[in-house]
Length: 459
Image 1 (tube, helix red, strand yellow):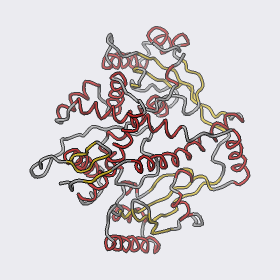
Image 2 (tube, helix red, strand yellow; image 1 turned 120 degrees about the horizontal axis):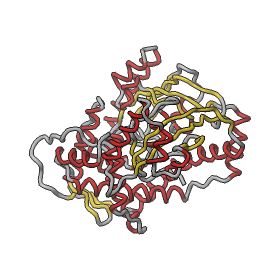
Image 3 (cartoon, one colour; image 1 turned 90 degrees about the vertical axis):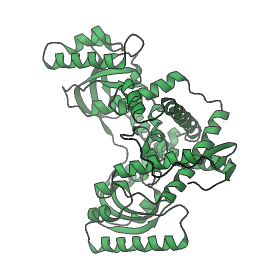
Image 4 (tube, helix red, strand yellow; image 1 turned 60 degrees about the vertical axis):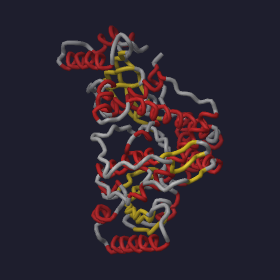
């Protein structure tokens, strides 16, 4: 049995641990917080705290749990550091603090629901999560520990944060999953509509975001609205949109000229699609108000056709898997597979023969051959490395929750999907849309049930 076919959704939802997560809450969000595949990063330098550290005190109580000033201060500093590293203008400290308070209240309320529901995360699962974090940061677990220590960060606190994020991912998945059933009838109706209507299914938008603080006064909102209107007028007159985004936008995509990327229309906020629905390529809309602020939107590209293709690119790959445990560290496994890779590339070893001898996976008797696989069959870290390879190439060792892999792509092909496979793709597209809506509704319900008492203003 090839265990790597099971996608580890929980491990993929560790986004909140990154400093980029705190920064993310200062940007427009199109998706639920738990996004599969988002990287977890470790600060590259210790956060410098300006001025003396104030005495700790309670800022807000969520049900019976306090959020302290020092906890909030740490989150604010992480968010500001990440924005600075990304070249994004940092909003006023009070605005960042308000966003972080709101985020932390939601987290505390959801964690309480998880605990009350009996969700637990054991040490082995935290260890696995640490391996994932280390792999995302391209260091060993021991290297991750040394890095945390060098930055003055508590290993125990880091592990506690990991545990909390795994609990949040589990409760979110459980609650959202129960609300996102897609029947065969819904999937078939979706396919029928796609084949008959030939809608615009792919669109690339550019945006300029003029951020509005959550508790902005009416005069502040009016000033920012006027600023957005001026940006809109310049874009309409034909000023280069990418240059405008780089100059004016408060969103991190300003570095890409404001481009949000070609994606299905359902992957954009509905208010964005409503605003540009009747615009041709090159058309500009705005200012569009969202919870994040005012958006100026430009249609950069449109694609017509069905959202569900009748063909898919399949990959035939093979791999060698070395397990990590008491008898073999991750570093030792990576070193061993690096040696194998060099030997194969130098023509001194045969990949299939080594796989039959060393691999701990069920594919070993077949020389590590995994057969033809469609997108989504492998865990993300494995699939990401595989997709970056051309046929015949061998990736550097890749760590997953199953161990360390040496991956070689043998060949690729375009395959015709059966009706059942097309239905599965349609079901996945519908489920993703429902999950967005279900998560938003559930998060609002949890926040609405929570008792929130604001105490002292943060410092």
